[in-house]
Length: 83
Length: 83
Length: 142
Length: 142
Image (cartoon, rainbow over all chains, first blue to last red; front, top):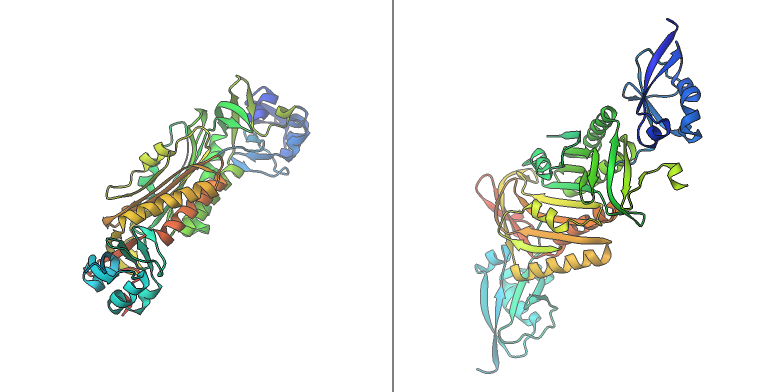
């Protein structure tokens, strides 16, 4: 299985409610992008509006063409509401 | 001397320095206005720019046609600089 | 001195006063956000603040650096609480010190605006009737 | 609760925090003015604040009432110190509480601007070299 990687995906706020989890480990083919993770594993459960949300990889804002690596920490950032 | 009144005049900041006093009792003919007090008793020592300053009578802002009465408290208010 | 911090502890305004004290600064502006007893007309008992702690702290530091670069301020404090806060509790503090007041007001306003727009923190309203809703949850409206 | 006061005692921010606390207010804005170590490039050791106490207090009350009438704020604190203050000391505090932040910032800014423009208080700079000058004294420039 050396062609597979595993990324930790974090969920907050109502995204965590929809996933029924704050953290999920997702197996992906090597070379997968953040966009592929979102489209294949997250969108079905987070809803189509999640396409417009922000995402981070290893605590830095990331674009959807970002290539993921084994052990990366991906976070799903729904619209923030601090203050 | 029942045709005379006396008003207490207060000075602050550099106006007090110019008068060399914080408080002066000024005798005036009955019916005198604030403007007359300023022109005859204050301007010569406070300088011509004091014509543009604000004045109060009994702790209320007053215009120069204000008639003064015996015992009134007049205050000379040079440009303020609080804060 | 600057402070940019996420915290579970109560916000201490006196800590911020000490941090930004500077004899060269004639102006200090503070903004405190607090948990209100209602939201959009509905009675609330408190708010749970969820956060992605690591990224939220990085974003607070980034905003603090931006404020110092963009405004003529010498010190900045940005503190945001996480966890369950009852009504009346301070959830966020912005404090800045500068030579004069215009830049202090501008920087403090920008500070809270950028925190609310960018820092990964989320509010869950604890309604007085016992139910909960996440702010900005589209499905909460149905 | 509102406070509009001239005082010889140190300004206590915690007193203001207690005065404006209100579960209906999600926003508090504070402005503190402090004695700086220089004025227009010249080193200063402190400032003497002269005041026409009676009228100054009336004017502070008037400004507080204006702010509550013109802005959607629920509480206001306006405190100005008088007397000799060393560098680093707070000379004036404006604090307001409101539902939301835009009106809190606007009211606090208006509060300090109106205090500086209208309240009969005068600053005498105690220069570091031992001499004194009244601010805005035309003859001080010669």
